[in-house]
Amino acid sequence: MKEIVMPGDLLFDKPVRQENTFVENGKTYATVMGLFEREKGAVVSLEGAWSPRIGDIVVGIVTGSKNSVYEIELSFFGRAILIGSKYDRQTYKIGDVVESEVKDIENRKTLILWRPRVLYGGTILEVKPTKIPRIIGKNDTMVQQISALTKTTIVVGNNGIIWLKGGNIGLATTAIRTIEDEAHTSGLTERIKQMLETNATK
Amino acid sequence: MASKADRPQLIIGGKRLDGRMPNELRPIRIESSILKNADGSAYLEWGNNRVLAAVYGPKEALPKHMADPAKAIIKCKYAMAPFSSMGEHGRSGPNRRAIEISKVTKEAFENVVLLNDFPGSEIDIFIEILQSDGGTRAAGITAAAVALASAGIHMRDLIYAVSVGKVGEELILDLNMLEDNYSDCDMPMAISPRNGNLVLLQMDGNLTKEQMSRAIEMASEAGKTITRIQKEALQDVYKKAGARSQNGNGV
Image (cartoon, rainbow over all chains, first blue to last red):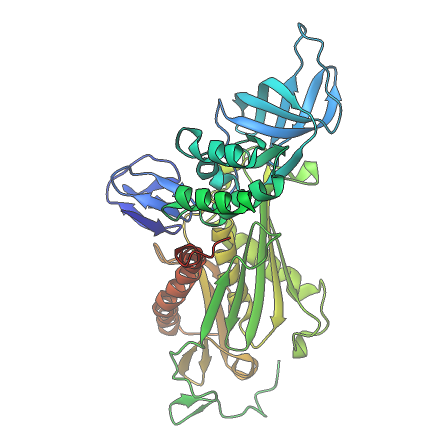
């Protein structure tokens, strides 16, 4: 059973180290507005900024370069840099959209990226980073479903930036916005499927 | 400050001028997440006060020399709209009073926001008073707390603020403009309801030691109502989205 908790709400009478919680005087409290499951113990934030983790896939825009070190804008409060490899000749221009992976995090605010891939053309869409897991779905089911029914190529970044190209982009955008609005409701995959099918045939 | 000589009778037959009991709040209504561009926002109606609060961040701290590599910095701007019937508060814009309230609001929130979670970043709080009727700094803090929560900023608590004043020897809760101008004392406080910590305490006038502790007690009692309204406002956003999808017209 999931319940909505608010900052400062008491979760446990014992100290439990979990995401989005803090311990004071041996008791555990929530730090954000989020969904709480007592069995799992974690608070899943409903709003807020992206907290990067190593291995996260991100989509960003190249905003600067110096000695083959590229600065990537990820709508994140810190800095993200991509160090060009000496083995490949790939260079990036300012304004290029790049999909990449977080390799390392320094001081919780400087991200080192690697495994870059330039995304040519297409459009980008910014969504709330907390809704990204729902947009991806379990085992990518949700994003694959949208991709299949609208024939759009979709790359989802954990930082809240989504890149779309080809197919019915308008319908894909509507679907993503709907998921963003209703991420916390149940039976969403089925509703999105219905919506996509009825609109795709029109 | 208006002179005591022409003071109207503020308490008549145990009731105040607007018909409230001494320990009664004005009606409060809060709406959360109403500005699309802001990361978090709230609109608050507290009696005749109308307050809009918006929160941006955490984002890159600018100018760069202001950034703290170990923690986030908070910037707060309190402003009264030119049409807010500010009366004797003078002109709108960055005046002495607005700068003071911005500062105390910022310091109140520095006590509850987990600044270490966002090193080198900045959190902006904007409080705009659209219509004022006494107690706007308390209303501003209450609205800003909701806006911060709706922005997903990590906080130790959802704080609220309320003022307690004194007319003659009687303590009154939540002063309106008229009571504020003519009362013997006005004490706005911001309280963290989880442990009762005071994060803002200002006083205009004087209270005895006993009156002071009774005033804090009155504020804490009223805080239960305010906290409930704040939490309901935050939850309503999600309940509405849930209801929309149940009706099947989510698209």
